[in-house]
Image (cartoon, rainbow, N blue to C red):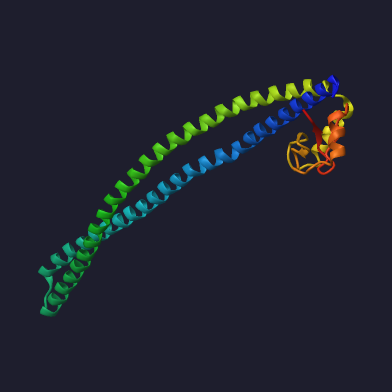
Length: 238
């Protein structure tokens, strides 16, 4: 193997490593919006949970307030009915008025029982909402720290990407145009980033297929880049 070929192989391997690392970094950067969205979705779940709990609490408080108003209205009715008792003229009217008062009192008693149960539920809900809000605050702190860490890493990755892109320009200038053209063409035809691979004991490091003895011997003597007859990757022998 000539010195020139060794240099070309070394430079092509360097280019391959550069592109592999560039792809890896780009994938990491591309995944950032998805990671951030997933973290934001967690917070949104807590926010929605708090909103639902507060809405339920609001409805319960309104129900309690409406019942409280109804009790007051009924109490006023009872007061007016009691005042009328002094002016009724017949026993029938008196009994009818007493029944009306008892009926309203019965309604008020039922409403007050319901209000008592609602009040207990309101107090329970307040505790539950407070717990959820505490959980939200802790989760928000944790998520904001994670987002900050992701953004810090992303900034470093972007710097690294710029560095790799600059190196790529320098590396490609050191590769013979025919070899660079072949490298790019093969890259579009294979399923992974290994365009140039080592052949060990007549086995291709890309497809793991055995190369014919004649081709293997030629590879060891050749002063030009050869391709694997099976996968068409560039091959070399140390």
